[in-house]
Structures are given as structure tokens and as C-alpha cells.
Image (tube, rainbow, N blue to C red):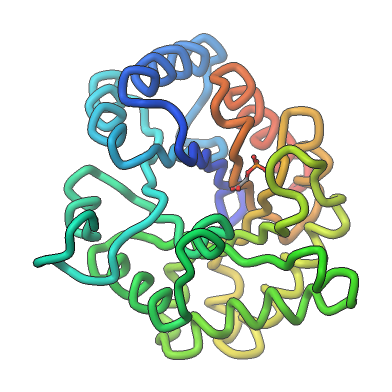
Amino acid sequence: MSRTRVPLVAGNWKMNLNHLEAMYFIQQFTWLMRNAHYDYEHSAEIAICPPFTSIRSVQVLLQAEKAPIRIGAQNVSPISGGAFTGDISADMLKQLDCRYVIIGHSERRKYHPEDDANLINKVRAVLVAGIQPILCVGESIAERSQGIELEYAIDQVSKVTRDLSDEEVSQMIIAYEPLWAIGGNGSASPQIAQNAAAAIRQYLLSIYGNYVAQKVRILYGGSVNSANVVSLMQGPDVDGFLIGGASLKPDEFSKIARLVTIASAQRDE
Ligand code: PGA
């Protein structure tokens, strides 16, 4: 893989798969990848973001399988520890080998409203723990019908990144996930995904310079599956995918990772 940005295929399991189901998934998935001779070192990076309760089981099985599949969490507390019933700290996730934490997913923004300060503090908390945040942004149908979708997504990026240093921003991953495309309702077109990724990269370039703009991976998310992933990968600024529903099926998720690897190699030839 010649590119500086290795494509990332990240599965967001949301509130699905208890720890027994998660173990079954990992066994099937690693078998499928082994059977397909997936060369983890030179292919798209794969991450799985299970519910908190399944992370430990996934960690143990991946270690046993010696499969370099990354683990991510779906949320984190902005605080490092103490009397916060029900919360999980970034350090706890680091102990479980979490390399990524999804921050600001639209479902969390909707059901657990959080302000920008909270999102900034979460990003800072995971960076301090040595974990990379996957910051989710993206417009609803209302902004899109007004034609302000790019401004909206960039504004979401800027509100979280504006108080961070260049070095901190360079550690981030941004997932563009238009709300209207999430949940199997039909993905954005490859052109829409590319336009948004390019606009976000252009914003990073204008504020943080070339190093940061070239380093940050920008993912697309929203109804990605094995039938549309190759065309979505054509956009030169699309560095991979955050995948919900299709990441719950081992064969489908494994197919997507293999297709992304082939499509990105062809794109970069
Ligand atoms: P979806 O979810 O692939 O099921 O549309 C994507 C996401 O919400 O991250």
C-alpha cells in the first residue's frame, strides 16, 4: 500500500452483539480473513468498535488469533476517573487495547445531547491516553435541502478542533456521516462522499497546514456495503469507511475489507 494514509475499515456495532455473539463473530471473521490470505500489513486496516461489554472478549480472542485487527470504543467519558456512575474513562479503554474511540456519532448527539465543550474534552481525554478519536460529523436532510451541507459539516469539525494544537488535530480521524444516509436508507453517492471529504481536507489545510491535511484520515459512513464500497472508494479524499449494519455480518464485513484493499490499490496506481 503506497499511500501515506492507509485506508481504514471500521465496524461500528452500535448496541448489537453481546459478548458471546461478539466471540462468535470474531472466530468467523478471523477464519474468513485467514482463508482469504488477507495480508494485514499491506492491506486496509480493520477496526471493530463493539459495545463496552464485548470489548474484553474481543481483545482476548484477537490476541489468541494473533490477528492485527484494531479495537475501538463507541464513546468515552471526558473525565479521567472518580464518582461518575456509569461512565468509562479513556485509560480503561487503553487497558483494553482500544486504538480508536468514536466521538460525536449522530446517534449519541441525538439521544445524549452533548455540547461542543464536551466533545472537545472527550477528544482531549482520548489523545492523552494515546488513543485516536474518530470524530463524526455530517448534515441532516434539513441542511442538505438548504444547500449548506458542507458548511455545516466543516462547522462541526471546526467547533471541536479550533482549541486543539496542530499535533492534536493530526492524530484525529474524521468520519463524514450524513444523517440521511445512515441505517441502510441508501448511501450518499460517491461524488457526495468525495466532495465532503475534499471540503473537510481543504479546511484542515487552510487552518493547520499541509502536514495535518495530508495525515488525517477522512472516512465516509452511511449505508456502506459490499455492493457500493468500490465506487465510494474512488474519491481520492475518501480514506475508508465507518460501517454500521454491514459490519455485523462476518462475511459481508470481510468482503468489504478485501474490496477496499483492491479498490484503493487500483486508485493509487
Ligand atoms: P450504517 O451506520 O452503515 O448502518 O448506515 C453507519 C454509522 O452510523 O456509523
